[in-house]
Image (cartoon, rainbow, N blue to C red; front, top):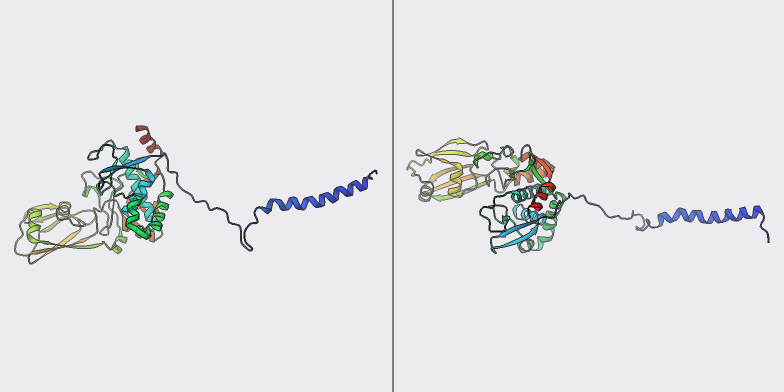
Length: 338
């Protein structure tokens, strides 16, 4: 049977009518997989900084007296967990992660390994940075381990590979617990001052539970440790000068001048911002702040974070003239040295 032209045309139109709607629907079929009235869910992508070259940190564990090798970012998390309360604001934890990473990168680049056992890059004490591994933190935190570790690891991951630099070099990213309302100039504590470690106001610290302290010392112990002799008049010397951070610089006790730094160390005080009075055979000493006062105040950082400041704002406030930089090129030097 021969097909007439109009019959062929009709057949073609019929087939097209069937096929086109199917072609229009097919591209959308795979996307319609959510429940009624809901958009289908797609994975949420989180932005993380680049961790840079793979580098291990060799920590001397003072308790076990052995070496522990740990990946750099895991080490940073262990420092943040040991040095700052996990309850602190996320932006404060990120700022702490930057200080911890900066410290260890600078230490790995340093040629000086004085006081370190062979093969170690750092100790796990306050002589360097306090570090605890995951097993230790599990025992310490118990049932709170997961949420605390998750929070800290997030802070570390979102700042991965970032450090604090001044004129292209890692800074001495010193930090402490609580100020007396001001941070301290570095030259008030150490021999050489650093331009980025200068005194700034830190009013948030006044809400710290460690802002005020008190210590009672027997008069004889006070005299012995400071090498002075007190009179029976009840007065204990005179403050000759104060530092830029409003702390005691020099005290004159019956003709002997002693630095506030030495007094703090010899009497094991929490701060160099102190006052005292003699009551009978006892010396009552009150302090403001907790720590040496140089660099970033941890409670100050948390206070800034509560007010909405980001970690970049926090570190640039406490460390003057610094930059937040990637550590890739510096870590490559560490890898090359091996």
